[in-house]
Length: 527
Image 1 (cartoon, rainbow, N blue to C red):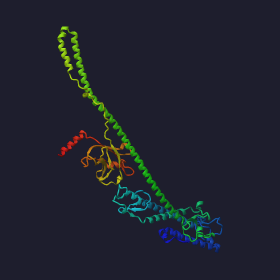
Image 2 (image 1 turned 120 degrees about the horizontal axis):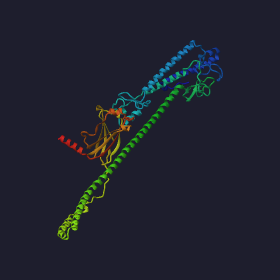
Image 3 (image 1 turned 120 degrees about the vertical axis):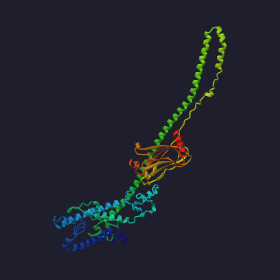
């Protein structure tokens, strides 16, 4: 048999030791065959490899003698039994110690971002924290954070240090696993034969498959490897490895591939969660717009009622005047008819000039033209300015430094002005402020409502301001103390992806009398 080449031996010292032990075992088996044909006494005392063919010349189907069966024949208080128990106890302690070391290695060499097994590990030159290259690259390329997630130092992708010794650590892990699994397989009760599954037996020799032929890429038993029992030596001069070591290597490779698939699946799940949250935000905005439409409808109906009342009031004034004048004319007519009916003829003749003069005086009173009284029968539907509504998502909130400022995307209102929302984190004062900034357009009065969204609608924080905005920040500009940082962290306003969601409603408005009075007071105090 041949050992691996020098390069493989340098990279895998554990595998080299396994190959060397296999070579020694093969030579020992050949020597046992020679001694077996020399004398029966020597063959009776010869030792065989665990699980190998019997030292006798019986057929392959005859019973075989193993190390465990010989131990079972010793009395409990014999030296062999005592040594076996001591060896078993020591092996169990060693296996436990190796498992403990393995668990510590697994805990240490995890990515600080995805908490999974490191893939192409790189470390921060400042704090030496380990990250998967893809994870830290995605973190730095997101644009929202250009610093180390651990020490917060400014960091660029080319400044990362590649961990070149990580392959040696992985090899050490595989060697420890192989030793641990090997000791656990050998640890059993004295005098008991382990039942070997049919899938683990060589189909030709019905022996346990313990080796892997790297040349043929086949799993073989010790008889196949050593060419014993008249075997023609099909695998003679081939390179072998312990089956457990090869198994561990394949498991490690497959685990790595499965973890990559799991990481891919987690990315898909994260994307799905973001889409679900986006759907929820769109529905929330739709709800806000429904309420806005209802408010607009109510305002339009109230405007129609107000216009109707104003016009009817004018017509009622003219109507009242005309009705009063008609009553006065009726009273005068009744008085004149009474005089004509109840006075004598001579009296009536004498009263004629007076009655004619009274009639002329009534007819000479001017009657207003209806065109002067008429009110146009038209009503206008007055719709107030529409709100510009949207959601500003503040990303990577936990990485904010003192006086950290982030901006939303620019948007336009119904009058064509361009705006953007600004969030300002003042850690030293425990404040989180929200501001509206005019980017382009003429200064104007604006009504602004900001909401910090919570999963529990009752905990959503909402504040409204009416303010005159121009391109110059001024006293009282925005909401500097919108909410405290303590409230954000303790009341679960922060999402699982380390973000805050701010819903905004803005629209142009007219200043109220109170606003005019405040402006006058400020201007007088400045003078």
